[in-house]
Image (cartoon, rainbow, N blue to C red; front, side, top):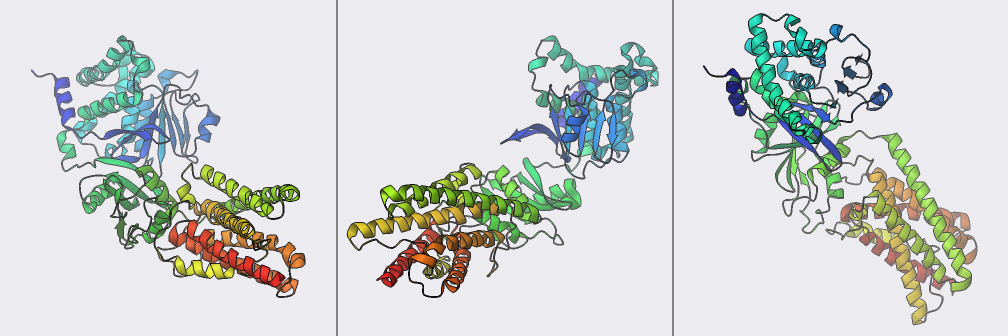
Length: 584
């Protein structure tokens, strides 16, 4: 007669491998089940959260069998659950962790609503059966009678052993025949644990890998091949991100087409699936809106992706993210520079609701940084003016502003300066706004120093100072300030047609205030004004504000600081010449 445990092991090998390990790129190692995509399981030996520490983990948290060192807890308001015996309790009268998990699922705990995190510290059989119930919550309520007749006795007997020990396990209420079969099954599941512990390898065991293998073994006992008739898996699901209320974007890799992958994902996510991102080969992504009635508009993502993707350089102009509002993808030439984790972050940012308070906090932070940098620059200029002369002082101020802006941009961008405009410009659609910005720089004649004399050295020093200041202004306002605001601003569709983005508006206003403030001494004392000082001040402010908006548009179209710096340089040379002419 065939060994039933051997038959079950053979059946398990024919079932789909639904349990997968994930992690990396700053994300801790964790375990997921293909059919429970919103549940992440972490297994670490040192998990022992106090009640206060558990509350700090956030909502939708389940602690298993010792991961929480406090009593059993069902906090439905916070969605915090601790499935365990508590200290100094009578274990005889308390359900084991696996039994608590089974009842929790059958009590209509919705593990498909929001992202859940499950913490365990020791993958013994009690914990493994609890994990299996949580990760199989979608199938648990619809098990075949034969599957229930296998699973429920397993959990009941393990609960009795956990509470009362093996000596009293026989009084768990199972009929003799069921008890013997179930005991054999438990012994079969314990073989691997005993072998590892007997060899002294338990403390060095890869707990997540071991847990995944044991969950697969439980699958082999409970399920049959018929339970997965028609089941198909995706090669790799990288993860998901919230893109709205009850809507997620899922990123995966598979050889099948986008529509086939979308169909499979809908079976697991249902109406929550809002967007599918499919990687066919590294760097080449297809984006697909999952429902024609969805509020997801891919145009909301294209603009931000084009701003942040290093490979979108406008050479040729069509090398960019694009498509329709329902389907599109990465640049066909060269693909995208985004790794899957980076693409998920940008998709989440593109569709998150505008957070005005967060944007205001970032704007205030940017304002403080600008004030500090400009203040340091003016202090450096004042320190050098008596010794180095009037011509070198503005260059020193510009150098401090440029260096500080570049260093802060590098730190904020995690050494990816191209995210803050430090990259070659692409396309030519920025030429018109750049020309207008150069014209509007002419009224800012108090900002750019005129040559002290028209000798070759005097002109060279003046041009060098103007070029340094032009680059410093762009690095500060269209680099640092614009880049900081870009992280918290939802941009308009791919072709805004005159719309002013929030990063453009805030950076332009700060630029106008600083430029006007720097021009005030010249307006009121140093040169012959074209208008009375008050009107001249208002003209300078309006010209600087218009120039700032145009330069932001140049930044958005070219994805670079350099065209704006060139426009500032041309305008600076023109206004320096005008200032010299008026002073003659």
